[in-house]
Length: 438
Image (cartoon, rainbow, N blue to C red; front, side):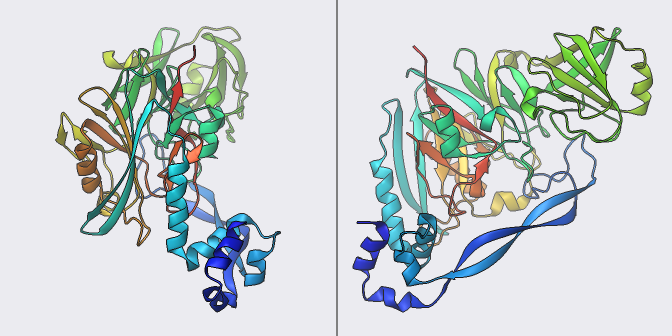
């Protein structure tokens, strides 16, 4: 018996009340509006280093509404998601029951100690999901990009399946266009630079993990002169010097004249002015600084250019890293560093879904999500409340990750929590757990 038929049988008397039309979204029409600032995620930062304000086109959406009747609910042709949307509005308790039962149906891998926690704060009921992973288990942690590029996005369940992960949580903050806001390191390669001095979760070659605020200073050397890199895999701006790696995409997508130098193994393979092809085993140096252009006017094919990154000692063995913030717990003490990491007050005080990662005294990883913005189910926590929660789990170090509609946990290919958007948000990256290869 299908879900709609089961519910109709259970509520055969009451469901007739809802024969009137119920508004649902049937299609989406795009419209363009001019906006100011490269990054529009106002809850995260006020300004980003190395990025100047420009006018861009942001895509927003206009909903067209039609209506669903009881006849459509039991119609086989009606989309399952629409049926769920209807019953979620009219019978929230029943839908919550189905969701709760689905969690217990998930097969929890033996490598993960999983628990669901229900508790209350002054704001109301809270529901959290916690996964603990021991370093002694035959598993490994890594940072994964959706479809291996920073601007690609996937729901967490699809991303986890793509990497054959046994568990995953959402990761870094990102802007409306998918640009990650903070450090990302994949296989020792830095694909996104830090934003301010924000907390970063790091994984080393020998599967050790720690939280830090790293100093990362990229530069290149040409004819014995050092040139500072202003950004990695981000939109160019006036008087800038940007590095593009294959994680950005196939081309640089630059649209104004400058100098772009395609490199493989520290040798120039191509010179162009815009929208350069990025070698799969190399990178592109994109220069948009008139003063610098004169210094490279005599550059030729196969000239030597050395790309280097200055790192503090503890970062040299880091294989994967992902930024977030702020820090929540440090040295076993609650220490919410929102001011030091330049987060806006509304991010700190609002009751919202939260995602965090921490380390306990035994070196176990603790991944936690708290659902929110769903009255009667889970309200959500402020950052200080979330810090206390992570501390209560035994974390001696912990940091916040992207939250709100991004808050998601997947175990064994199944969505564990209940995202506040009503469905999974597409993400550009995640922290995943894999079984080690034999």
